Amino acid sequence: MATLKGSCSNNSSLLTTFCAANSLSSTPHLVQEVLPPALDSTSDPPAIFDGTTRLYISYICPYAQRVWITRNFKGLQDKIKLVPIDLQNRPAWYKEKVYPTNKVPSLEHNNEVKGESLDLIKYLDSEFEGPKLLPDVRLQGYFAIALKALIFDLSKRTANWKMQDPAKKEFADELLACTDTFNGGVISSFKGDVKDAEPVLDYIENALSKFEDGPFFLGQFSLVDIAYAPFIERFRPFLLEVKKYDIAEGRPKLAAWIEEIDKIEAYKVTKLDPKELVEAYKKRFL
Image (cartoon, rainbow, N blue to C red):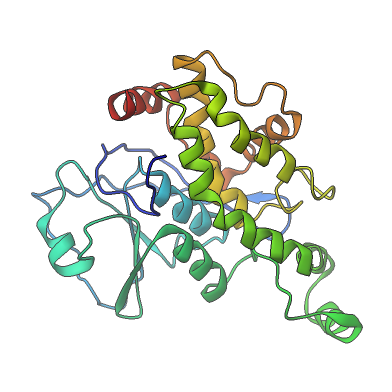
């Protein structure tokens, strides 16, 4: 099984044109953003540690995509500047001055730099404004909910109440801890029997059946969906092309999840051309 970590060290760059954020309600609020070109070895560094919060990514890295989606969904485009890096021709200053591991994603915030994608999406969710993407079990009971009812309007209360479920928090922790196992299980099938991927794919199908109050892992869209989406985005077209195997066939919950997540602007605008993904995976894994 492949060893996986929450960052990218070497891949090609890709330029897209827009990104978006969702408001706390289910109605998306589109924020148009012209994405900058990737910085390479000829590029000057930004004014590092000048008080600007920066998210260093690669446009094609699935780990960086997790944090990019989270930023978009929480509506942080004006608060967190996107700094794309060309990992095929990366600038020396990135390792020397920003992040010594020389990987993406990384986040420059409050005069320090943090890394690892799962840690970063949790950090953005807890430390920045915007809709919460993980269950909050701190506010429970009648008085706590009544207090929130006085503070938030009806739409905001509805979204938050649904996420105040200890069972959802526990399940979220389990699913986030399983991301590398899932990715490794699917990747191990690339050169072998595609049936090797079925146990982890069936695990995902069953996980999507746990809560009935929405099509996502926790019912509502959450960090769990963000953690899995970039990889399912890559695995499905690759296995369809190389193995003639559709991971969603016979898995109605997964098929519905893919359909619904593709409607979320914060994610949709970070997606890549499936043909480009397939070719990149062929070069990497075959």
